Amino acid sequence: MLLFLAIILVVAWIGGFAVFHVAGGLIHLLLLFAIASFIFHLITGRSSAT
Image (cartoon, rainbow, N blue to C red; front, side, top):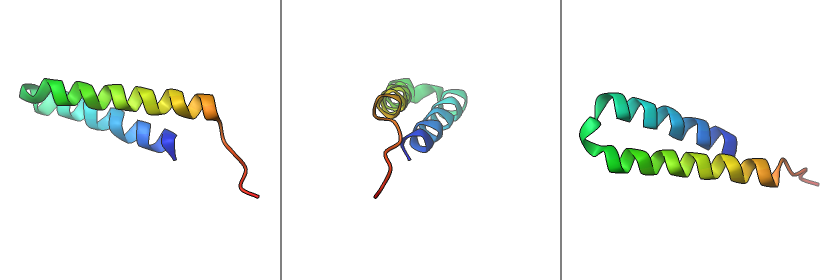
């Protein structure tokens, strides 16, 4: 789930950076959140629901 969220945020960042260059600060915050969620996903790994 976090990996999917990270991918969506990176795509939104790339699209926003290409289309809305004016809102650069918010777009870079999206990138930072995507990287943080991806790293969190790598650290925690996939847990089995039993």
